[in-house]
Length: 121
Image 1 (cartoon, helix red, strand yellow):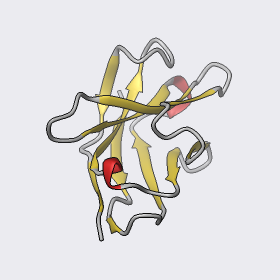
Image 2 (tube, helix red, strand yellow):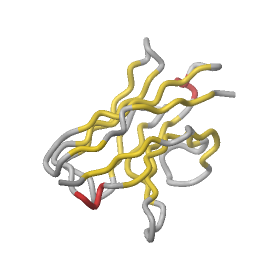
Image 3 (tube, one colour):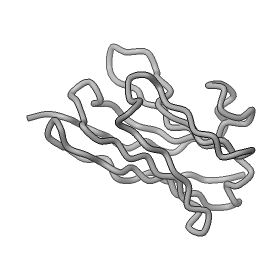
């Protein structure tokens, strides 16, 4: 099994940037695809991004495409999500999770505790 710990969430003004971190322990996360998912009050859970373990392919939701970059540092066993040009609608709790089937938006297994991102003036 793998344990995930998230960090990097903050209160930021519109137009600002954040880099979220998902640090894994207990097992190398090379075996897992890693997804970022966000949950905001009144909204459906949304898969934001994913990086595949099989070929390193990356995927982005239309809501963040062009603003977000997901990356993996294998030496540090950490996945990052950089989001630029933040908007108030990006406000949510952001979770990272393993995705057993690859980046298909399903079969999430291990979850982090979540980190709060608030975009407001």
